[in-house]
Amino acid sequence: MIELRGVHKAFGSNDVLRGVDLKVARGTSVVIIGGSGTGKSVLLKCILGLVHTDAGAILVAGEDATRAGREAFLARFGMLFQGGALFDSLPVWQNVAFRLLRGAMKRPRAEARAIALEKLRRVGLGPEVADLYPAELSGGMQKRVGLARAIAAEPEIIFFDEPTTGLDPIMAGVIDELIREIVVEMGATAMTITHDMRTVRAVADQVAMLHEGVIRWTGSVAEMDATPDPYVHQFILGLGHGPIASVR
Image (cartoon, rainbow, N blue to C red; front, side):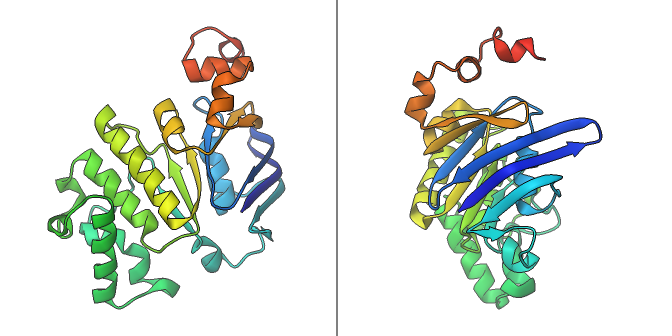
């Protein structure tokens, strides 16, 4: 569903992506791990076309992402942003139905609201929150609203950017479970970036480690736990000493 071939991206003298090669099969959930500042978020932005690559190719369902019509291309994606990125001035249901109230996906207002209520229900929120504003919700509820918005337009591909950041362990576990259930139900292709190893184990079919601008390692969760690769071993165990620390 997604294929990256030799993707490069630099910001001035900072070479963030140095030849990323990665294949994400249709209907699978891939989690990208790696230290802060390794370019994980930049990689997602490159796929979406929000950041233009310097070299390499990005294919989505076999189509060159740089040549696709933007509106139709972006309609294939949903995204749960790290900070929630809810619109403070809009009530919850309009946040969820944002794409359904404008542009090519525009639906009648009553229909868009009905879809929003159903997606809120799917993430465990009742109709009583629909007319509240984001500031009136807890952090965990805001994450759920963000997840409802990500799936409102039934996307083929969903990106999750640090989905459990700032949540307590119980709520983080709830969000992980919801993500896994929804991805499986929708048959969507998912790409998650996270530092949370519990999220990795909860949602990943495949794991890829981004380090020094390239995909250093890929494999299943079971293979991740068994690999002798010292970079992966250090990262997943959170060790203070090892090859990652030595290059910082």
